[in-house]
Length: 404
Ligand SMILES: Cc1ncc(COP(=O)(O)O)c(C=O)c1O
Image (tube, rainbow, N blue to C red; front, side, top):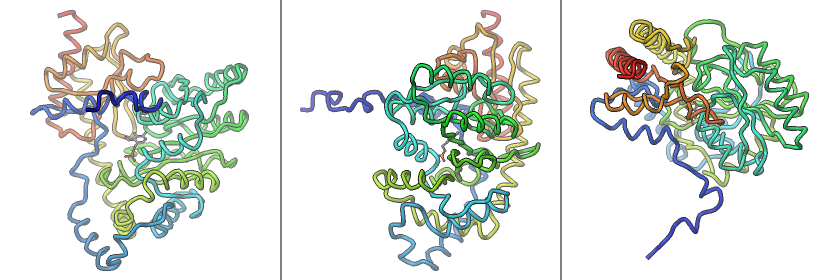
C-alpha cells in the first residue's frame, strides 16, 4: 500500500496549490447557479456550423497528413497567416518572430521555465491574472506587486520598486503586463504609459511579458498599439490566443518575440507537448483565410458589448452607492470595489447560497490585499441571468452593509 504521496513530491510539486478559481468552478455545477465567476466566452459565439464544413475540408485536403505530428514551432501556414494578419494591423513581424503554443497558459509556463531561477523577481500588477502569477511562482519567482490606477500599472512606483530591489541585489527578470482590458481590473494602458514602461524596462535591462488575450475584444474607443509594436529593443515578449476571440477549447495561442527567446521556448515546448495539435491549427488557418474569424469576432464584440451595458445598468439600478465598479471599453470583466470594511469572501459565501458566483478580488493580489474587491464576468451569462444575478448580489451586499 502506498502510505504517502507527499514524500515523493518535488519542492515545486509540494508548493503547488489548486487554483482558487478552479475551486470556485466546483460550485458552478449546482443547478440554477448564475455564474459571473469564470472567464468563459459565450457558447453562442462558437461557430459550430462553419466548423463542420471546415473540418471536412481540412480532412479532404490534407488526408492523413493533417493527423500527423507537427513541428514544435507550429504549423507554418498558420504562422504565415497570423504574421499577415498582424502586418495588416500595423505590426511588422516575420515568421521567425512568431510561434504557436497550446494556449497562452502554456506560453506563461514555458516562459517562466526558461527565464526564472528560484528567487528571481517578477513585477506584476496589483491585481493580475492568477494563472500567470501561479505559473511564475511554481518556478520559484518572487512576485512584486505594483499598484494600478485608472490607467494601469503606475510607472513611478514601478521604477522606485525596481531601484529598491536592485539596491538589495535582487534579480528582476520581467515585468508582467496585461495592457488591454486587464484581467481582472478591466483597465487598458494608454500608449504613453506603455512607452514609459518600455523605457523603464530598457533603462534597467528587464524583459517585458505582454499578455494580451482581450486586445481584439474592444467595444469602443481607440485601439492602443501593442507594446511589442512600440518597442524597438527586442525586450517585449507578447502572448496572444484564440481563446477569447474564437474558441478556448481549441487551446491554441501564439507568442511574438525575439527569435532567440522563441528558440528557447520551442526547446522547452519539446519536453512539454512536442507540438500543439496540427489538425486544429489547420482548421484555424482555414477559418481565418475564409475571412470568418473577423466576421464572427464582430458579432462576438456586439454581444459582449450589450452584456457589459446591461451589467453596468443593473449595477446602477441595484447596487448601494458605496459600491464602485470599472466600466471597461472591452474584455470580459467588471472589477468591483466594496467599502473597505466589507470582506468579499464573506459576500462570496452568502451569494453562493443564493446561487450567484463571482471571484473574490484578493485572489489576484500577490500581496494578499484587495479583500474588498470582486471580479465579475459579463460574457457568459444571458441577459435574464445578468439582471437576476446582479440583483441577488446587491441584496447580499446591502445586508452585509446594514449588518442584517
Ligand atoms: C490574462 C490571461 N492570460 C492568459 C490566459 C490563458 O488563456 P488561454 O486560454 O489561451 O490559455 C487568460 C485566460 O483567461 C488570461 O486572462
